Image (cartoon, rainbow, N blue to C red; front, side):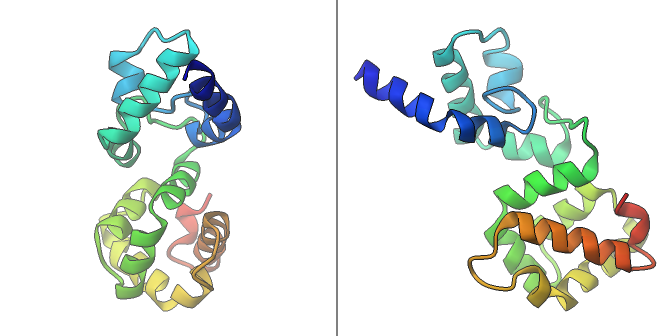
Length: 160
């Protein structure tokens, strides 16, 4: 059993490092910032990551910029991570032009309340560009979003 767990951790370590977004092997969240703050061993990182993902606090932390989920890479890097973790709901909300994930994305990027309706309308109008197929990768959605924002006179100021 011990070797099975160790094999799973070793096999998934590149994925864990990518998902962590520069926040260490367990990512950000309550498990990393409070419960296993001094984690040094691989099993402590696994427990911290499990705590972060199963309690839902990692998503909350990324959306609110708390629990160690503040990014040094800026709001667009945070938006990329948010898109990766919320593709299905974001697609559904983009199709309707409203919803929690669309509002959260606007907030993460820093879109002002004044420009939020325009942001949502632009994403809805460009749904087919953002989500070309059901298999569209989150990185493509992110890049298309950035391109759309840079081309829009109102949203360009948020795309830097």
